[in-house]
Each structure stands twice: as C-alpha cells, then as structure tokens.
Length: 206
Ligand code: T5A
Image (cartoon, rainbow, N blue to C red; front, side):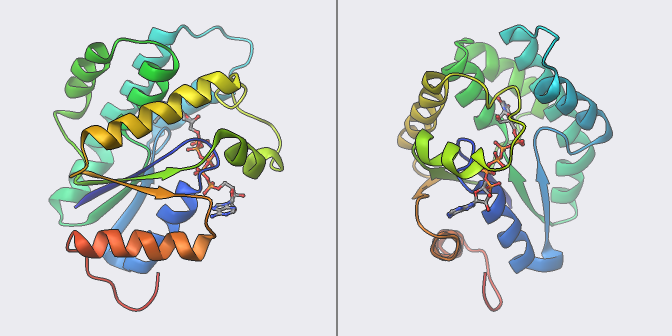
C-alpha cells in the first residue's frame, strides 16, 4: 500500500507520517519529497535553499519531478515490490497544489510530465491535513530560517490550500481530509481510523 500525507507548511503531516511509520514498525518505510535520494538531496538544496539563484516556475516544476523520478525508481517501487507499506511525506499532489495552483503552471503539463516521472504510480490513500495558512505559519514560525517556498506571499499559500481542497472534493475515494487544528494525539487517532477502514491492520497504539 502506498500512503501519502499532504498539506500546507506547518499542517503537521510530517509529525503524523512519522507516528504512523513507528506504529507500523518493520512493515512500513517512511520517505519524503523532495530529498529522499542522493540526487534528491542535491535537488532539495537547489529548490529550497537557493536564495540568490533565480528559478523559473517551469524549472522549479521540472526539478521537483526529477526528484520524484529518482525517488520512485530508487526507493518507492522497490519497497512496494517487497510488499512494504510506503508512507510518503508529499508526492505528486504537492506539485499540483504548489506549481499548478500556486505558480500557475498548467495542470495538463504537470500531469503528463508527472506520468513520465512516476511511470503512472499513484497513491492508494492520500491524507490531507487541512489547516489555515495563519495557523500553519504560527506553528513553524519558531523554527527560524524560512526556506524559499515559505517566504512566498500569503496569497500563494492560500491558493495551495484551495488546490488541495479541490483535489479532495474531486477524488473522495483516494483522499481523506482531516481538520488539522486538533492536537497531535487526536489527529493520530483519526489517521488510524481512516487507514483501518482501508484495510491497514494496527497493533497497539499510534
Ligand atoms: N514542494 C514539495 C513543492 O512546491 N512541490 C512539490 O512537488 C513538492 C514535493 C518542502 C517544500 O517543497 C514544496 C512544499 C514545501 O514548501 P519541507 O521542508 O520538506 O518543504 O517541509 P514541509 O513538507 O512543508 O513540512 P513542514 O515541516 O514545514 O510542515 P509539516 O510537515 O506540515 O509539519 P510538521 O509535522 O513538521 O509540524 C510543524 C510544527 O508544528 C508542530 C510540530 O511539532 C512542528 O513544530 N505540530 C503541531 N502543533 C500543534 N498541533 C499539532 N497537531 C501539531 N502537529 C505538528
């Protein structure tokens, strides 16, 4: 099973993805985008930490897709082939939310290039942690050193959130949306409930 967590900055998806991976133990691997491979770590630095280098919206899109192509090939497909549950912190839907809704890249462009990058791999279950932009930024404010995406205007992040909510509405079989202002424990309970309904078995606790 291939499970993805999505949401705006500070929505708490990395926290929930980590908890889920630890609850599932050796049956699952936890991975993320961008930056889960050797190549991906270089791409991540370019994408998030370059302040002086200009990166056009299309170049940005292609870099996220290059990271994904390597990630699918090197990490995700081999793990799925060996019957692991793959938990991924961001995947294709991040590109649609950020580069299509956020930057204005046409969706058909991202979908056709994305198809080539992933070989058509799609998540079985995607969980959106939905939170207001203000609440998300309040959570990450304390950690300092905002990256290139975090310094985008509030309107950009509002468009990203809208994009996610529209994707959930368009494909309710794959997506589940959780209101993410609840505390970590309550969100973890909800994640567990969603996945149990999809057939994932848990031991004790999440
Ligand atoms: N991107 C990525 C694209 O533009 N296109 C793409 O195709 C892809 C794949 C990645 C950036 O790249 C962009 C999106 C991003 O801008 P990143 O550094 O990997 O950036 O970071 P994010 O994925 O954005 O993750 P964040 O760490 O910023 O946010 P999370 O994962 O939503 O939140 P989390 O769990 O780390 O929590 C943030 C803080 O909130 C606290 C945590 O302790 C932490 O301090 N917290 C809570 N506080 C209160 N209540 C809760 N329920 C909480 N849950 C967590």
